[in-house]
Image 1 (cartoon, helix red, strand yellow):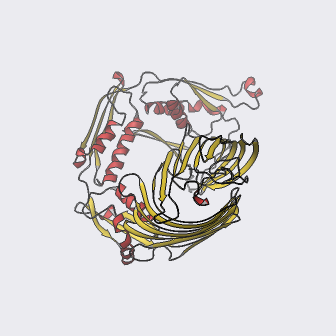
Image 2 (cartoon, rainbow, N blue to C red):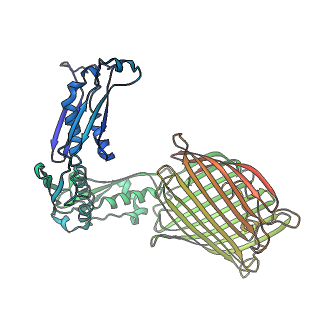
Image 3 (cartoon, rainbow, N blue to C red):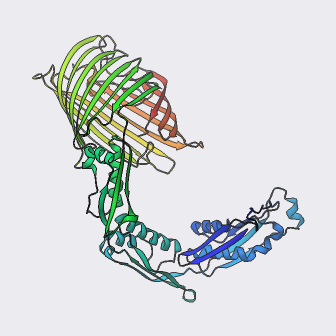
Length: 599
């Protein structure tokens, strides 16, 4: 085994080279039966201690009989590891095991130990720290902020890692902003060991910032790009920015118009201060089909079939539909989408649906048609303005009705998260409000539902999820709205420990009536259980579902435990809830199964 030590201004690295014989065949390394362990003491700082262990980890297996031959190599490795943190004059004492001692031989399962005691000594302090940016980048605050946040300051302990990080950060920022000719003019650390001092000098010349040159596309990509031109964050002549390149690629992908998206700057062909950018697109299939079968504790066995046409014409129109069937619900939905200014953030869509529900004491046949305008180009809130027409034939616990309503409404929402199916932090807020009037429909009412959900992580391995939902129906006909607009609680998404939508106010005949008010909340704590990609959970759900908060209503409570298995497609959940209904003196366990995003 050969060792190569590299000493440079950025610190000292250790590289292990594979040993080879003269005929280029690998050298077979013999296994050591009496291999020693190296134990380092005297270093209080855990980061420094870990760095020393990492350096010593480059040593080969050492026999107790030959350990003394590695004294110089051990001292050099420990010394170089300490130098990275500014300790240039350590005192290192090594105690080797006595391989021939009878006491050592009697310990059949104990490995001999090389004891390395380290006194790091006094660290080297930075005396002068001179970091200078030349070129056009000298006027950019982003470079100034990198220097300010670099931890390299006068009168602080020298740290080679911070020095390397600074240079890497300057390089990455220069490339991200289009300073493709940037280079280090001076980069050095001058160490004065007798004075316990060091001077740092870094001079970085960014040169001039490049701008976007020609946007290159082939004939097919140019045609496919027509409905998405408003999504381009880049334009010929504008300042180059890798962030804008990435945003453009992401926005094009979100349209679902394209099977693949490639937005690439051609840096090698830059000239005259400009960088050409190539956009390559491949069209999504004309028809996309999906068939699925699933199971949940709420709907039992269910199947779904979807049919989408992602890009119908050069104006970006699209069509989507799905048909979902279970024992208690059958839904058919079609949506036709028309972009206005931005196919992702500013568009119209028409929705037609037919929904049939038959479970508990509810039977409903609902026909729905609506026109929507979604605006999200300005501000952080998504606004969905709509007007919907619904005809519902229902039987709710013996109450039979036929209602037709035309309802203007607004869905106001926002979602922020760290991303993925299992985010560490985030929240979502939505409020959906609509009203009906007898001028153009059957009833006078106002209905609104507010939902707030969130997640945060007390530690890297734990999660706390919480939810609050408030619903209300107001107005002259608030108690007579169709069954689909009334409030029920129960099930995996509202109140675990109870069957799906099984709780509300009741008719005089004892059957479910549906309520005009609903308040529900939940808090859940997830924790590791020692299985990869799996978590345990404890939770408490609670809800009130009533026609009047002043009545002697029930508060339903559902504490329980759960199991989570995390995949890249979603989180599989198993929950065992214990439903408590104090008013009716009813209690019992309920198992809930589901799969989907955690938040």
